[in-house]
Structures are given as C-alpha cells and as structure tokens.
Length: 169
Image 1 (cartoon, helix red, strand yellow):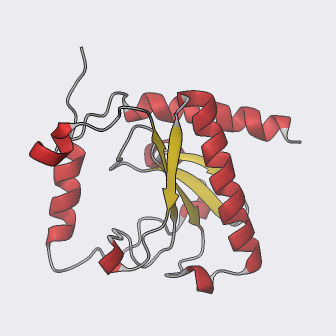
Image 2 (cartoon, one colour):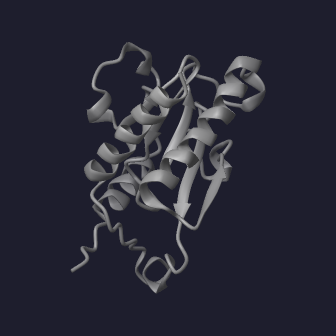
C-alpha cells in the first residue's frame, strides 16, 4: 500500500504566504558540522554541501549549496563554481546508486519571480525522475505522492556518499 504524503507542501506554502520572509537563511551555518542527520546533509565539501530538500518534488530531491551566502551565480568565486558543479555530479551519482532514476531535472531558481523559496542563497536542485512519475494528483488536487520516507532515503544516500568518498581517495 502506498501512502499519500503531502503535509510538507502545505507547511511550505503557508511558510511563504506571509509577507515577511524568514530572517535567518536556512543554509547558512552548515560548516560547523552539527546536526547533519537532523538537517539531512548528505555530503560536505570544502566550498559546498549537498542537502536533501525537506519539501521535495520527488523522493531524493537534493540541493547543492555553497557555504557562502550569495544570491547569484556571478557572486561565487571560481572554486565555489567548480565545487557546485562537481557537487551536482556527485548528487546525480549518489541518486543513480541509490534510487536508479530514469532521468534528472537539474537547475536553479534565481530570484523570487523564478519561484525561489530561498532567494538570497543560490543553490542547485537535483530532482530524480522516473518514467510515469507524473499523474493527475498534482494537477487536480495539489498533492504529490512521495513513495519513500525521507529518513530512509537519507540513510541510503549518506551511506553511498561515504563509499564514493572512500573510493575516490
């Protein structure tokens, strides 16, 4: 039996329907190494980290985020840009190992008008996609079926990240 799990969506919509945006950036401060499992941080590099989206479009939706708080890609230095791209490659590799998707949506929402939920801190989305993963529910009921618990997905991705890190040394 599949569960229809979408309470995250209404929390997300409610959190940004107010005129006032959160004062504190949810991405900043991740260098300190605390609460990685609670924050669903899958991997940490020197310039960027990979974190699960807790308001996912699909199970395994990841974000690659520079540590420095910058609103645009132009504000990142060369080292950050390189690790942002390499982090994106790593996110895709981890999802291929764990979830075996048929494809990916990769991109950034730059600025509020583009749909950016966290508009002041640039990040890339990596969304795994499967043939047939779209249906009438999101269109008719604004409901998305998430077929795997986020904690289970996190454990699998984190374990895969440790293997990839060890094999690359």
